[in-house]
Image (cartoon, rainbow, N blue to C red; front, top):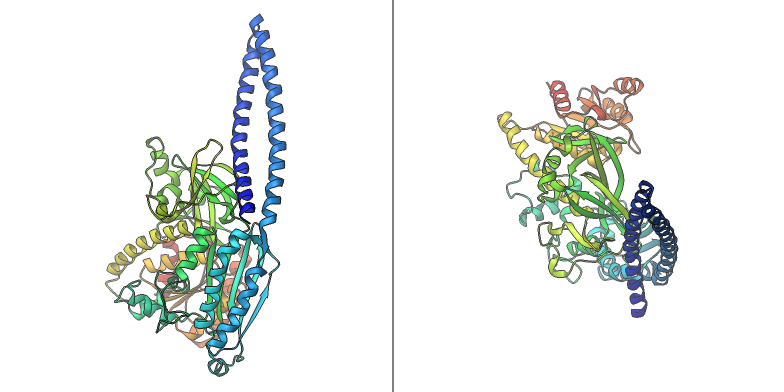
Length: 569
């Protein structure tokens, strides 16, 4: 295996070397074009010699091109064969986990059934080796924290036998691995209590403030270093280490992402998104403020060009509407907090006011962010070189850099981590919102905000609408789809409801109609916020009982807030 690893590493270097050869070919083509242009302008005897030299250079350039393309094809095939020799089925790591789950369950007095699917999917052994410990920890955590005792399950109307399911499927150049249980789900109250004890949430946070923390934010708390809800320390859990280590291993070492989704009483699902191999990865190279950066292709959702007039202002920040979803925009150089060269400082300062914007949409889990960049340089398979241990999390970019790649000119380019970029953007938004909320509180003379339910299947749209409303003094609860919105509406009491139309299960029109049939919501203001803008859709919205209909493309912070205030009186 050591010899095979050495071979794969060498093949990666050869693939990287092809980029340099392509660069040399590009320079040869430029010289060829210049020589032919010079020969065409020269009519003397010397010019005849120049023309002959130009023809010879042209033939050489064509031969170099053919040789480069042939070698690139052969090296690519050889690299694929070498990687194929190191690929292993996921079953090599999943099968032992099934035994661990059953044995651990018995040791805790719980009967566990562990089901698996997708074991035949193959991953690079380099990833398999790093993945085993992370999966074992996640399964142990699910059994200890998630699965209830047989008595609790029977009392809740569940079968006594708890179920853990590990499933894998391939999606493009990545593999999705889901670890699901049918247990109690995340204990929101307990997590918030522990977060307050550890200082992750302000000690004086009221119950109302705790309710405003989204389910996604609560789930993210369990990945904080040293976080544990166990009452005592055991060999299974409670040591306060593990989940943060798992997240770092997935995001930093394996260039992947981890998402968590939970429903009270119905269980929890953790989804890992991993590349097929780390030996060679597809990298998008881009330029921002005179600096070159790279982003792994699996985290790039799409590339768009938009104009200044097509952007909208949401909570004081620019955003675009993409297929019924609000996506915030931010210049990459501003997000990284790096000084820009003087010649591009003016361009950077006015980046969001120019007519044409080049935007790279990155996505992690359900969240998306639009990075405004100056230009795209290249997109190709490249060798990822990890940062030395002493350089991780240090320097101006902190934990935003997960490694480096070498370009065709032998330049080192920082590889940015998409999850860290979204976290950084979220922190920037949070600081701005806190300031806005303080101003809003002063404007409202300290009166308690009214409670609004926001229902939308887009995480981005939910968070943006929440920020807009909170900045205006409202308390907000989020629901991720129509059914979730209906359950929260029936289980609580809200002063107003904002809902999208296109949602799985129960759409916004049906949700509005059901709410109007409920005594608590017969006269409650309901606003539909949707990308649908036909007259028929607007008329249907009014027919089912909506008080207002706002098109996302025309979304404006003041428009939404003013409409809500008018309806609430």
